[in-house]
Length: 112
Image (cartoon, rainbow, N blue to C red):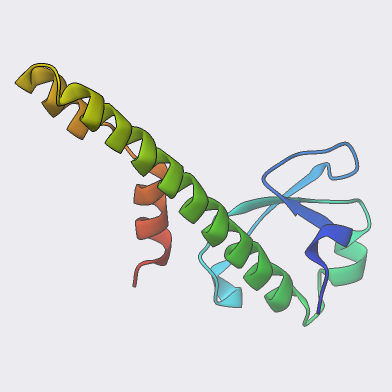
């Protein structure tokens, strides 16, 4: 299996991974997901048939990352709702309206 982390990294920018890339729709993945690569990446993969595998792996990693964040955001919202259940209706309504941006992003990108 291709090891994504030997040549690129998702979202987190580290010193060795300075070049920002974004996924392309032409590879059959959700476009616009950012990832960072090292200086050798283009010379090794730019015109390679491995780009599909790389971008598919970036997509899978991002899907898992968003699903994890979504779960955390839902848990935070549910805790706020529980705490607000001891207070006013306004407090409960505000807690119920707590945004879950990772869930929205996951739905926008991956729910087909």
